Length: 474
Image (cartoon, rainbow, N blue to C red; front, side, top):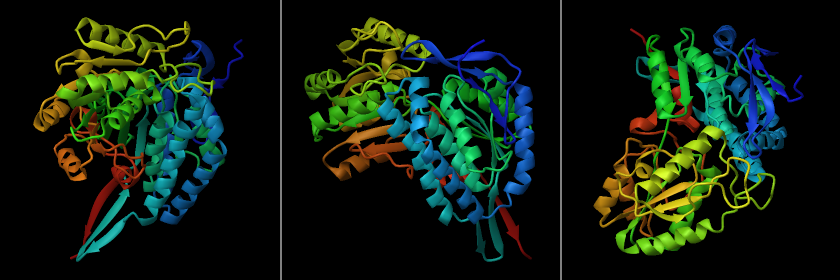
């Protein structure tokens, strides 16, 4: 019998071991199992949805004050488990321990704190003459989250859903379920009423599809690949439920000619490689003036040489492994495609970094002289791989930035704030970051085009869980 920790579902306020098979949770730094997760299926989804539906009848009637108290209790319970949550993220996806504790786990606390502030002033009811507008919870929400930023995506969905008065059924990634289980423990410790929050482990075919098509789920909030997002939307269509999607990205980072090139390049490289490049909004296309290419490439190479790839438990490590074997194989393949298509290999390349013969480690890689038609300029790689493209005019830079099926994020670097803002207005992206600002949970997050629909964070995320009712008096 296995001595590994066994993760089970949390349904209607109780832990429940589903009858499906067991899946090993692989530590990507060692390629060995660190836990097992019991996979659920449609039967467990039915139980969780029924529990959420029963709980909704009462929870939707709670007051703003009651929900504020509940979110405050969740934040306190979450804070008490921050280190545990960070360590779980480090084990399940290979994030360096310090980064996992401070950023990966910290971002969940930031979303909770922001949602508490948002809920204090959110307008649920207003009068416009004879019209009374009521903003009411949409109902039972099905939440499907990925492995790359587990706490970010769990909390930025769960917190606004509860703030709105919805009940939830969460399916986290089966590849990174440790932190999700700890979050369920947090919810239990905080006294969340039975059925308001439910956790169902499983894969896409067994649980994700059951959530998407379930007739008693009123909304599905999905974060993941564009391919999977399309499938979720199709499955949800038969029951005419609302679907919000945060999908892929291939974000451009425009360094305008007047920018501080060394600073802009360094910030761009580090942002691209953060979280081992596994961020949907990573600035993976660096656009530089044609006459500054050689300088920009040399600067990018120098930054890459300072990055320490290694054991997540080593304090010196700045970049851990990729999160799983599938992603490792994909990134290795796309690096080889970049070389074969003729991109200039500025840094890195295929294979593991020197001295690392085990674990899903990737050499931080930079391609130069990339043309817009190359695969590395068009596909979302989701690893520490940066493509440098050149432009000859501001108009060309904007056109290149917008030349993608995605539209999640974009970046602009310039000493001229007015010029940067003018360029930002012309970029078809949900969020434009000018001159490397700090991350904030108050900024709307979501995309244009095939990067999805709907917005997350703060009042923008809360509004997604709301139905608007008009009451008209004669």
